[in-house]
Length: 132
Image 1 (cartoon, rainbow, N blue to C red):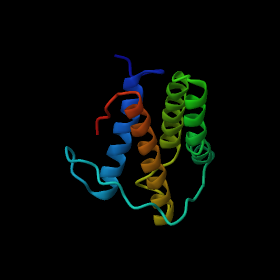
Image 2: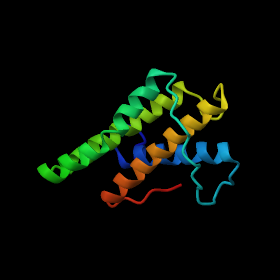
Image 3: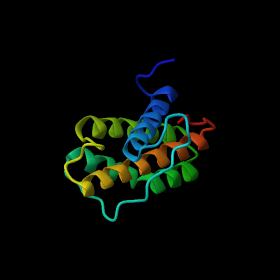
Image 4: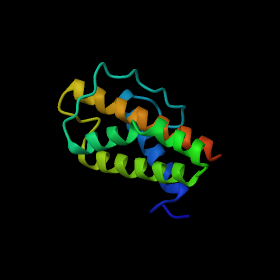
C-alpha cells in the first residue's frame, strides 16, 4: 500500500492526521472517538493555503452534482485527492495548535473539522471506512 499519490491510504492518512491535530488541540486521549470542536465564529484567512483549501471545500456540492448528473464516480476520487493534497499543504504552512491568536487557532480547527467531514463523507460514498 502506498501513502503517496492518488491512493486510499493517502486519503486515510490525511483524515487520521486531522484527527490527531484535533485531539491534541482539545486534549482528547488517543484511542477514543474524536469529539469535533464547535465551529469558529468566523474564519480567518491569513495564508494563501487556507484560501486554496476553502475554495476547494466549497466546491463539494458542485462535485456531487456533477457525479450525479454525469455518472463519473472517478470525479469523487479526483476531488478527494485534491482535498487531501490541499489540506497537507495547509498543514505544512499553517500551525493549528500553535497559531498566533486564539481566533486563528479556532478558525484553523474549523477548517480541519470541515476537511475531515468532507473526507469522511466521500470515503463513505466510495465504501471505504475511515480510521481515526
